[in-house]
Length: 388
Ligand SMILES: Cc1cc2nc3c(=O)[nH]c(=O)nc-3n(C[C@H](O)[C@H](O)[C@H](O)COP(=O)(O)OP(=O)(O)OC[C@H]3O[C@@H](n4cnc5c(N)ncnc54)[C@H](O)[C@@H]3O)c2cc1C
Image 1 (cartoon, rainbow, N blue to C red):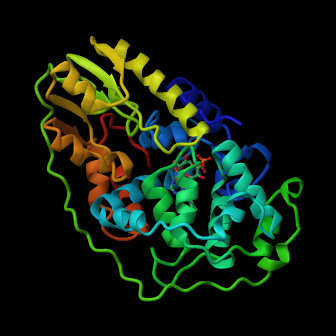
Image 2 (cartoon, protein in one colour):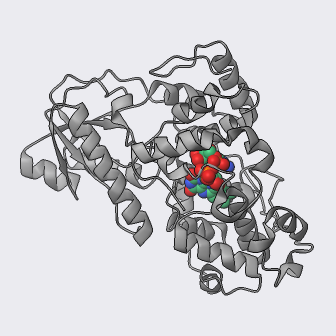
Image 3 (cartoon, protein in one colour):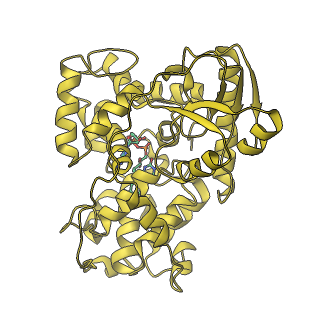
């Protein structure tokens, strides 16, 4: 199994997957050994070893845009979720406040419940750091509606193990399964659906009868979260000569608005607290890779540091430039950076700024507008190219 942890490996995997994208829309729901019908690029995209735009346009050397539209849409689901959450950051705070241990949860996490296929998914998640999208849906549906456990605790289980853990994609998908994201819609894991899509060699039928006719846990009184944070104003790239901070939210500064920046020094940090062994290994390799690339791209020394504030104090630096972390654990720490007297100038990619403005309502309106900007060739990226 291969979840690329350097930019070159991710580009090679993307290149190889391009040959299979033509069959993506018909094959993507099938869970087969080694997950050959999906890209397994999510960790690389989530940490921006590759940008969504690079991944969306790669198949176009081979296929008509309409043939690969499903794949392009999936790639932009992440951007939509991120945009949606960045406008409503309180939803993330409420999730964190709602995580509470439950006496029945450990059995399910350890893969010791009554439905064998769900036990297999729990073990696969812990042992590989990955689950196919359909397996994530079934497992989350099982957790909420069959095992009747709190969705926040299930989302935290994924957070603690997925190599691609993304606060927005993860939490909002769990909210959707639980019936909170789209009021009136829940997702139930059904035996017939699992039997249809899980390869026979992977399907252990024990306990599947519990999924013959599951009943949804209907949440009471669902309110649509309001937009509480407006779009952030566009900032000028600061004058050259400040410290460039590279973090795990964007491991591709070369292609960002900071690509042409001339820093005095570069610091690279990663958040390792609470991560699983596999998550730490993946991140260490990816940070090593961005450090090497940054050293070549920028004419500045690169230092890997554990604690940005301590490093700043020790080095007498006060001003830092970086890409803005999206809502999630690193973003939560920005306050403490501010309180320590550190001045941060945080940049946003033009495509993120534009797509965020479209994430006020549902995905399909977002996609329609995004698609039409792509068709007209005026989609804001650092690199203009017709996609549709
Ligand atoms: C309960 C639940 C939790 C999830 N948690 C996460 C998470 O923490 N991090 C994460 O990256 N994805 C999450 N997803 C979305 C999705 O399952 C994964 O992105 C996808 O399975 C990754 O595998 P892949 O790279 O092989 O995807 P592919 O099918 O090859 O898709 C290509 C790319 O499109 C994006 N993508 C595909 N499907 C989705 C989707 N449903 N939502 C958002 N983006 C998508 C990913 O960047 C992915 O790499 C979650 C889905 C569910 C149902």
